[in-house]
Length: 105
Image 1 (cartoon, rainbow, N blue to C red):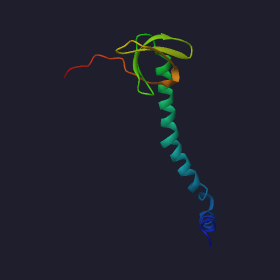
Image 2: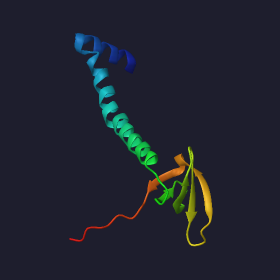
Image 3: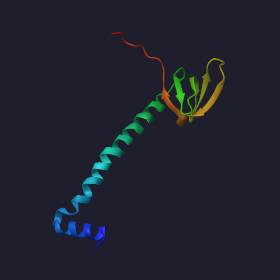
Image 4: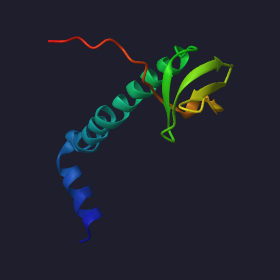
């Protein structure tokens, strides 16, 4: 017998619990893979909606700069040291790196 036939026989011999064998891994994968990804996406969307002029950001390409102007779906960023202004779509922002005061221990 091939593997599929053996699996069907095994599931059938377990009665009503046979279908649970397939359901448990699917539920586990949902909580291990999909839920954390949804949380990460939600946090990233909140970060993008809270961006304002003066924030220091890093793009997906690794370019660091300070936001000069926020438009509907794009940003204008001034880079250092030459002060070149570049326009990026908001989805190109990887992180807001505005310096926050560090607590000394």
